[in-house]
Image (cartoon, rainbow, N blue to C red; front, side):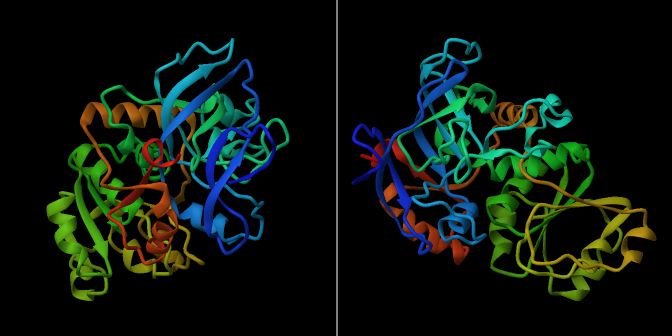
Length: 355
């Protein structure tokens, strides 16, 4: 293993260049501060963001780069000021590890929208000036404000995807009051985010319809995930038959797609929330104006709503569908992500494979 210094004690897998190829790496975490928690990582989810930054997709990757921002594990040490956690607690860390803690959004527990910007869990500058390194590693040190309590009865491997995929759909759903039983929800796309939107929709008591361009998703939508209806979005007759029938639509698709056909499906005052990142969003102004409709964007969620989501999932037994993999399979998993060949989230078994 390569090492950043002689006393490096954190094992990891890192990308060394924009090929994005991951290989064993060893480095030192920052020293535990008075407000910090040191976490022995047991599992880490695999997100498309891991692939983007491993391969320098935004031109700002800092190598060696250790991906991973769906982190769960067990508390191994706490700073002197930490009261929320104790050694042995189940704990999670999501997409960010710092914020200004002083703006209106931070004060409201909505740190992900911090006015001064958040420090991402990997590939950003940490409080000590070093570059943050993510959860494809044996342990991590994080300020306790950005850590989440995982209910003891909730399986750690299943909790990992909640910290990015889960919260990315849960946060806008509760913000826009999509948790009203009996209302109708459309979900565009059935990947890591889309399958969680279906699960939350059913847990909220909604009538859930999945929209996909792939007929192969029909059986899994209805039988595996429990959606009420499947619609092939390329079938204009099916789409037309559903005009003005949805209260809400969650759009998780990052591939380019038309928006006007989906806007037509919303009832008057209906809401479409975009959580994917297509290259552009285009629609006719009449699609919004004539029906008093709303289009909203969203990313992840603040600390308050994230903890609420974790507690909700434990109480209502909402579990992601995962494929558990060893760290040695990480490169193949990233390749399969490109092909959308996963149902529905890879989770790395850190504790049993990173040695």
